[in-house]
Every structure is written in C-alpha cells, then in structure tokens.
Length: 442
Image 1: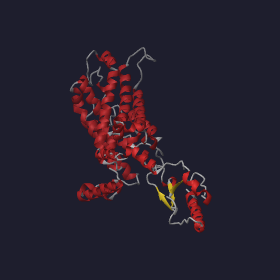
Image 2: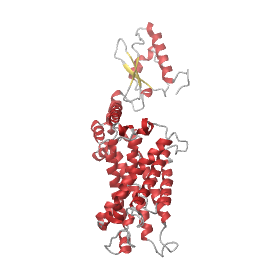
Image 3: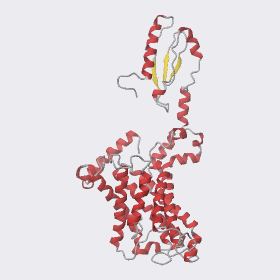
Image 4: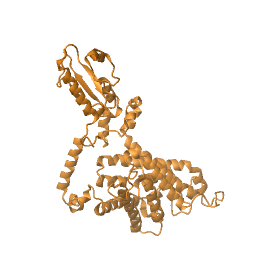
C-alpha cells in the first residue's frame, strides 16, 4: 500500500497514458480521454489491481486491447509504432481465458454450491486457488470430496483422536504384568493414557483444520450457541464425529483382538467391574463407589474446564491466548493431558459424546453385550448429557466474565432475554438469517 499522499504504480501509469493521448490530439488519429477507459475485470483471481484492460479506439481500424500489469515496465506507444503494437502479443490472459479459468474452478460450480448450502455448509469450498483449478477436481469423487470437505475433515480428525486415545488405553491395560516389557511391568502407565489422548487431540486438530476441528459435539454446540457457527452445520458435524469415533474404535479392536483374547479368554468379553474387563478400552465406566450425582458432576466440571480454556485460547482479545492457530493444537495437548491427569480417575474423563457413545456402540456390536449400557447403573447417558451441560456452562462463564466480543451473553439480561422473550429471539434470528443470506453465508 502506498504511503499517504504518494501515487501508486497503477495511478501513475494512468496519468502517463492520459497525458500521452492528450498530446496526440493534433495527429491524424485522435485519441481522447473518453476513448481511453480503464475496465476492471471481476473475473481475475489476482484482483482488479493486476488485471486492468486499457482500450482506445482508432478512427480507421478496429480497436485493440492493451493489458497493463503494474509489475512490468509500460512502453508508451508512438505514431510510428501504432501499427506494430496492434500485432504484438501482450502475453497476458485474454478475456476468454479468464472466463474459462473461472468456469474451470470446481468450487464455482452452481450445483456444488447449492448442494453445500442444502447441507448447511458455506457455499464456498475451503480450498486454495492452485488446487481449485486442477483438472481432476471435475471427477465424480473429487466433486464429492469438495462437497463434503468439512464433514470429512471432522470424521478423520475424530478418527485420529480416538485411534490414539483408545490405542493408548489398550496398550496399557492389555500389557499389565508383562515381564517382557522394558521395566518388567507392562508397556506404560496411567500417564501414558494421558499422553495418548493429548497427542490424539493435537494431531486430530491438524487433520481437521479446514472444518474448524471441533471433534466434539459439545464444543460444536457451544460454537453455534456463542460464536455464530451456523446451526445447520451441527447435525452434519455430529454425525461425522460419531462415525469417526465408531470406525476408529473398530480399528483399535481389530488391532488388539488377539491381545484381548489372551487377556480375557477366547470370545470372552466383559465390562467393569469385572477384574478382567476390556470394555474400558473403548468407552468410559465409573468407579463403583460413585453416586449418580457424583458421576454427573465429574464429567460436568471437566467439560466446563475444557470449554472455558478453549474459548480463552481462541480469544484474540485475550493477551494470554494462543495468538495464532499454529499454537492452538499444542495448547489443546496440554489441556487434555491436564484434565486426564487431574480429573480422570472417577469416570475416565469422557467429556465428549463422540469419544464415548461411538466406541460404546462399536463394543456392543462386536459382542460385549447389553452390559455396555447397563453398567454403572446405566451410566451411559452421563457422557452424553454432562458434556453438553458442562461445556455450555464453561462457555457462559468465559463470556460473562472475560470475553468482550460479540456473544449472546454480552446482550441485555446476559442473553436470557432469548429464553424469557421468544418473540425478540425470533426477530433477532430472522435478522441474522437475512444478513447471512445477503452475504451468501449459510
């Protein structure tokens, strides 16, 4: 950007051309400022400043087009060179080429954009320009991949999270008492499990960066509630996260099936509190001494801490935040490691519906039986409900006491007006939908 009062390259070029055409008014072929009109192309991916087409009309022959690029030296035409300039190739893309390039972009296809809008996604695919123009993007699978790019990212991000987390639990549990291990007492300890979940969340966020890397239905819910993530994305993200957890736990089971048979017995599958239970590899089970209220509170407090710190890390107005998405995955590694080290003994710190329900469903499907639902006094509902309640409370606390940006909490009555005045809430929602439609955002 030019300094205040300075003339940038394109403006200086315009002034030179205007002066030149004015001086030529006495020659046989007259040029006027009206004949010379800069036309800004809206189709150029580089923006108007690099795609200005200068037209001037001659009285004896058809006009020619001269492409001006501010990065190159511009020779001023002279009367003796006029005919010569008409035949010189400017080595710049023609209007036809620019339109063709735009139409060749797979992300610009109307059918793809409409499909993404119906699914609740942004019509524009999160893809860099260089990849958008690749010819293979017009293949059938490439179109599917572009249409479902964010749900696929959530699926594989959650997959990586569960793969590392459940894999760590399986290795520690199934190797207890293994004298062949270094140290003579198995491969790992409880801290190894915390390491596995921390590394899983960090790598999962790197994988799912294009979707926002929520990897947790409760975090997705709070992002819709407090941070304007469109609600229409929630069901699709929820399904992708559940499937990612289900498939990843199935991969862990397939990898450790022989170790499970050796630990429990061939085709024997039990759940806690059995001394040889292996169902805890895949989903969480509470300690026998916990009351129902204690089970819920343990998951509630861990989930509240999770959401509170996530909002702090993503808050650009917070001087203690991660200050850039590159540090966010590493910060989440320490957060999950800390929650596991401090709040994991009682219920196993599920804090994630996709981390618990998907693998629990998988364990039921491979033969652990109905006990996966009835164990712990039908504990299975606690990791479903408590994370939503805890994350909602943690997000509310952060926005009420620290966050200074736009949030439902930073409105009259701390956002409770939406509950006690449904008419005002409906009006505000219609206004948001109208703005989103004008901006082309779902």
